[in-house]
Amino acid sequence: MKTLNTALTTLLLACAAAQSFAAETDATNTVAKPPEPVPGSNPIFRDTFTADPSTLVVGDTLYCYTGHDKAVGRQFFTMPDWLCYSTKDMTNWTAHGVIMKAKDFKYGARNSAWAAQVIEKGGKFYFYVTLTLTNSSAHCISVAVGDSPVGPFKDARGTPLITDDMTKDSRRPNADIDPTIFIDTDGTPWLAWGNGDCYLVKLKPNMIEMDGPIKKLNITSEYSEGPWLYKRGNLYYNVFAVDVPGVQPEQIGYATAPAVEGPWTYHGLVTGKAKVGFTIHPAVVEFKGQWYFFYHDGSTTLNGQTGGDCRRSVCVEYLAYTTDGKIKPITQTAAGISVPPKDN
Image 1 (tube, rainbow, N blue to C red):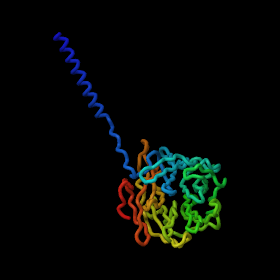
Image 2: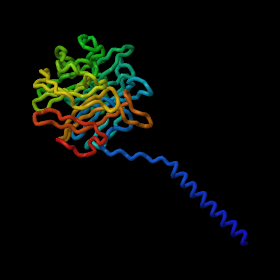
Image 3: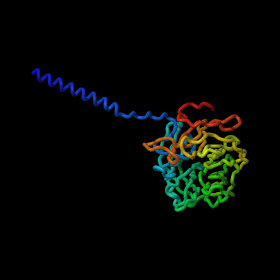
Image 4: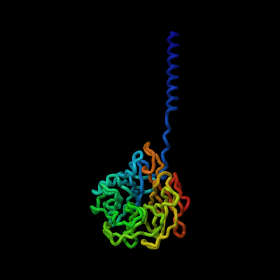
């Protein structure tokens, strides 16, 4: 009996030691989960790679439209569709998924869903997009229409609104990208766009036809692409990517004017280059009394895939003005708008 008790004791001690070793091993091999991102910190969307943000306020909701970076490895821009997110408080976002695909335009190349913007008029939502033409390297700007901010959208014309043969005087061959749409206080819709040069045209009230000649805006020799046109008070603003001499990646600059057709005065930089990536793309919006600056950056790893030139993520910062209407310089941060604004 003594021998049996001794054997049982030895067995129990061995089991306890094995359990303790296993627990220590599990603790050693467990990889700590990264902390949950603070709402409002950058990037604001972490479900997939997003780029080329644009914004629209409808009632108490802000909608953010983005391109969808799907490039793998060293692939160039591979962007099959556009996504939409919405928020009522700038920190909690609802993902609406894909709202339109490049191939929904019969003449659009499959992976060419570049920068776009949505605007509302008369209860309809007009979606101005960049595409590459099928079996061609030429770009175009097209317009779709829907009854809701999140679609469904359909091609409003059946043909592009703007094509490269309309801007033969551009400094760059692929001039017709990055549309920004703006409706002035008198109800006149204006479309601006351009790579290398910034172009402007008035649209007809139906929002899908030009109403006059295309004009090239004289802003600055540093203008690159990605204009964002808006009005604050009696002053017109154009915020855009710039090529600063000696700096390869794009940065963001801006100009102001007393009228949408100019004359435009360039005021220099709003913010510098993205942490990672050769592009940066702006959107500016006022929502519930606060101004915001949206952009993209390629420094974030998502779902095990590193960011980069063609895998970017949308970010947001506060934006503020001086008393004479100039935009105060913006620092790109990880905290984003998860902390109160320092300067308004």
